[in-house]
Image (cartoon, rainbow, N blue to C red; front, side, top):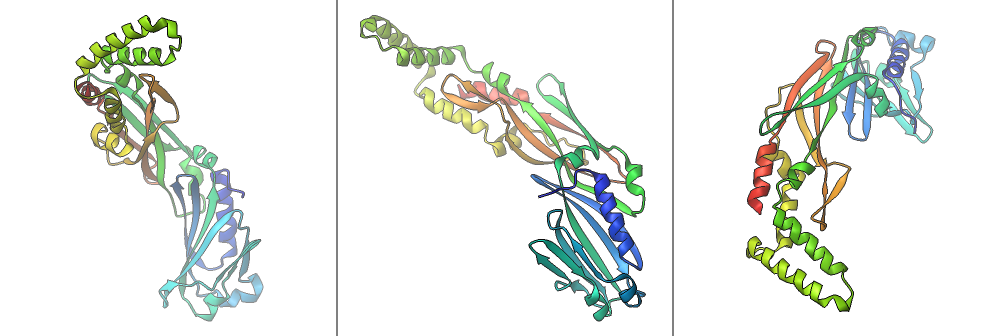
Length: 314
């Protein structure tokens, strides 16, 4: 499947389609960002007073490559106000748009939408984004920004250009906050249990007994709760929804919203028993257009509250 690799390709596709559609029209480009899939949508609102006259001269049938185009939609606006399905035919090797139906229905105006597949590189070439951390006393502030790299290139030939839900990711590192707030005796007990499990020599029974006695003393400090249960409770802190709701501040400027939260790609072993993420990845989203070509915002990680809750757990 071929995707458009740059906004320039989308502009060229839009201009080529614009030259084919005869009549007075209002045109726009819209890039919709989705996880794993981005769409560049060319939209034309067309006033068709002269369309039937150009039937034989220009032709009203156009073919598209389904590897590049995901979907085509056409809506009647006047006098018929509804989506018209039979103007588009999907085949394995082509998508056919037939505007003869528009002439047959005597539509005075209609709206055409053509959705092109775009890859991640096309977004990187379109927008410059950044998330930079600023450590504070009991929290960490992330400054977010996104800006169109070359808005002037988007103006040529189109009345509007919008970027919807552009993603800016924030990696909130939590490994140190976990490690530094687990009590020393918990770490020591974990090391003792690992040493007991690794010791198979029957002639070292005295050493095993000494380790077991030391472990018993540490367990008394832990209280009635066992280590496994404490670790299970610790893992609950890192459920993405809970982490986002409890430890991520809502002090975002209106330019950005938090879209999702998930574990980061890198993990580490805590107390030798459990795998936890080194960071939590938050995806924020913003909208850009020719009138608002830059966005800024802030995100707050409540590191002090996170650390205090881990301490209270033990």
